Image (cartoon, rainbow, N blue to C red; front, side, top):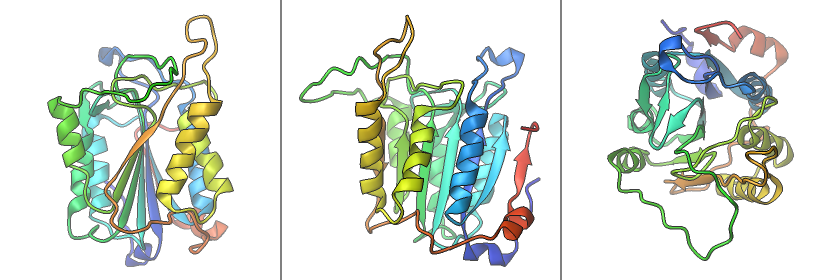
Length: 263
């Protein structure tokens, strides 16, 4: 059961953070250390930009679907941000029960009348395969996007939506015990780049990670990460301004935390 929200919530932008750190024993998926740091910082960073932030911690697959369905049926002022952090493969992420959720099933829900004309930004911190990026410069990169999940995923993105991925199809995404390079750099830029148009913002995000990040350790030494994004925008989109401010009192009153397990 999700919390009811007053009509006044439509005067604000909203964000939902789906954060999976722990998995059931039957899922056979490793604990994702560092997720809590990403979640806490995202909450603080987006709240300062006027977003009403909800957090869903360690949800099962059906809970993830239900949470995004609920969000797609609630209006916003101008923008909704959805953050998904979990284990994944190309086109899917996993709930804490180990069951897959097709990303296309999430995106497609935001094509209905309630969110029509509203800006939508999704951030996906998850592996999209098992390859590691050596950071080799080439003239072009050929990616096999012919899989059913990959095609369905792209076709399911509604108008006026941008989806930013931590990594390219087929590749792994890095997660450190102090947080992921993708989401931590995202937060850095939200704090630094007030008022930037979203495609300019995400291009800078890609550039900073591609040129400044390099994995360490005996196994991963020198490996890189290259984020990418898909845009179905038909108009400029400025998600991170101070136009909508939220007081500390309002945050305490109206920021709902949806917990499958306590942080």
